Image 1 (spheres, rainbow, N blue to C red):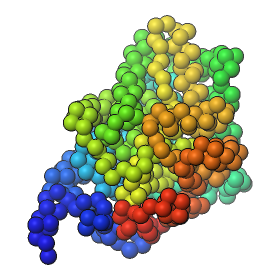
Image 2: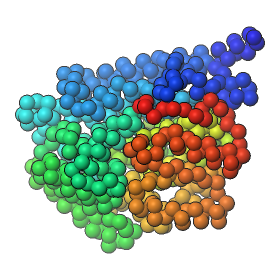
Image 3: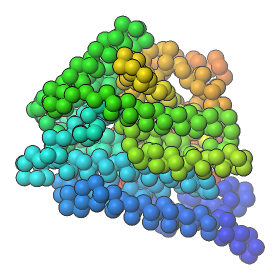
Image 4: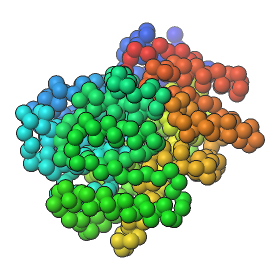
Length: 535
């Protein structure tokens, strides 16, 4: 036994690559589960950081968040009433483990803060729902019920800034659907099956099926007197809104999302439609539009976007970007879609000095990078941490995701007309709309962003039930060949892990890296895992 190497491995953690006698992360798993036999040893410093500042810190703050946003009684009632709470709240630190697997140093710290923000925002939202929920309070409509606005997850939270001094707004599906299948890949299956059981065909987008199934199984809290829906991302969302209107049976406004939004006349239409939505909110709440509050919240949101641009600049021009692909993507989608929250500013304040330290000291945050990857189209929600696996296994470093770039703008606040025009643009640049089904010009923004972020490889998502992206599959294949761009396809069914398993996604990437790129894995123990039954 080499005691000197053993001591070094204990103190600093084993090196990444197998050639150096490095770590074998796959050996940490229990057979056929994807669950750990024991915690990952990252060296003394990083292991103790993970235990105290990530594991213990987040469990403690999860309890604190529950207490300050509504209390233990409401939380317990919610867990007992809604199956998606317990399915995701208890294994949430396993979600951290998957996304942060193998990470060290400043990248571990910065990425973990992004997870902390998402957990806080999640608890804020479901506790806001539980506080007002008539199903948890004997059918009574309390003051919180009258002061909470319900809307689709695809309706930007900033639509309700003018009332945010008096009302809270919470998406109906962001937590029960979007967040849950990231944390626990099995949560939405019963909702998809439920909506098909009442006659909806199985071929529409499974996102829309899951959102509708929540209502079929009565698994959405009743926390608001009215609802605002939207037809984003595609026409399948129209059926979601119809079913939500049917099951909820309360005043509803359907906010329009145009398919072609580069036409100035279309933007004017959307501006008028947003004003109709605001008039609907005024009529339902009895509270007028508050311009001063709108400006205050928009300027606060703009600060978030400005820091995001700083982060992108570091990601594009250096090797010192300390945020991994899954943390970057989920945080950005969550933050930009929900809108301004104190936790985003708090976490950005924690991440800034870490990033500045990395740039100042020229720290190579992902030193085993072989390829800088840009991920394009819509990602598999049940396997967002594939990019962590891909870096550990093959050195594929996902620098940027398409959905992160959707809201690449600030919103003017100098006058009402400019604000309304920019709000309409922001609304139309929603996730899965602009660069997924927003026309060829926007779908092919891939090439300029590939150059912008200095990427040499594309991870192309292939959402099997998205009629829009399926229609341009061949066009992308032609472009990849003509441009001589290495690209691998990741087929998936968005939230439904039964159609294409995580193991199948890994197998396809493994096959590409061995047969096309002729490369050897950094960590062979991660090539084959059986994790179908785990979260």
